[in-house]
Length: 138
Image (cartoon, rainbow, N blue to C red):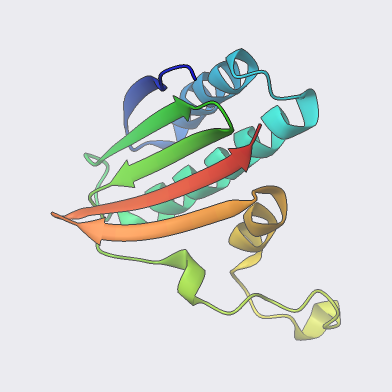
């Protein structure tokens, strides 16, 4: 069994930095041996979560987002960490895709799609930090 490989990037929570963090995640997912579709799913999921943190979590642009990628023998993990107020996106009901467009409520669609793309998502809040972890099996 090989040891865990761990990679970290930290960005200022600003929309112009999202491409950097998503590219980082994609490069590590490629290194982990994920196929192109899986790499794309992690890329899109990271983009969605970081955008939500920036647009809804931080009230000022001086916040930070840390992303830790882990390659383990049987899985690839991405943990996204921020110091915005506590918010667990997994506690909110999923929107209903069968609802007619003119009756759909705003919000919730991004995390809905993340849940479709990623096998396991966990949330925790401790020591002033939100931690959302995305796990995919290798």
